[in-house]
Image (tube, rainbow, N blue to C red):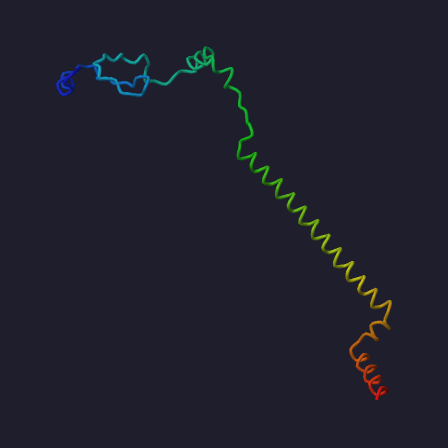
Length: 140
């Protein structure tokens, strides 16, 4: 193993101390290594060079096409919209049924009162009191 403080000051151009992780994720001891100079240039590619690189790439046929797949957000939004529409339909249907029930109950009660006005009159509290009063006088 190295004395790190001594090796760091003695490193030359293109040298470095490197540590990596083993299979279990444990850092390995430092190792003095030589670095390789980059094999690229710091310049803009010409159109010809770019086309040559694209032709040689194995990934271009697979990833060159633009596909607009449906995202999870779009799927969830669609499901929510469908659920909201169904709820609105159910609510409208319930309101229609409630309106039908109230109109049918109103019409049936108005039919009863208009079809038998005598029953309504005879069952009024005033008529009942009068009849009971007359019966009470007759019984004396």
